[in-house]
Length: 121
Image (cartoon, rainbow, N blue to C red; front, side):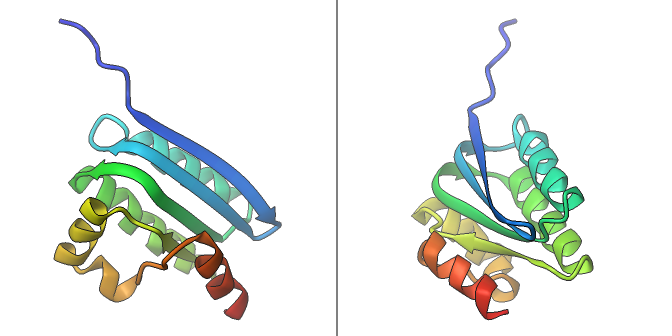
């Protein structure tokens, strides 16, 4: 039985002491959800409570990925911050809408708009 390489790229750009942009590309699923969860938890641990999640290169997300996002929203809000979704692809946006996550965490058109929302907070 061959082992499949996880197809998820995560890149973190620290904007300031309390804000990070986390860019995600590839597939967010059962095999890769823990990787993203670890990155998000580390940013929160470092005091970056405003997390902008750039989803523009994310091709696929299943319920495992959705659970990581929901947990990150709760953790960020518990620390006085928030999770800002930016530029979800149409496939990912559909999942966010079907599950109702867009009601509590509305997606932004792009990273710049999400960062503006952080600044307006």
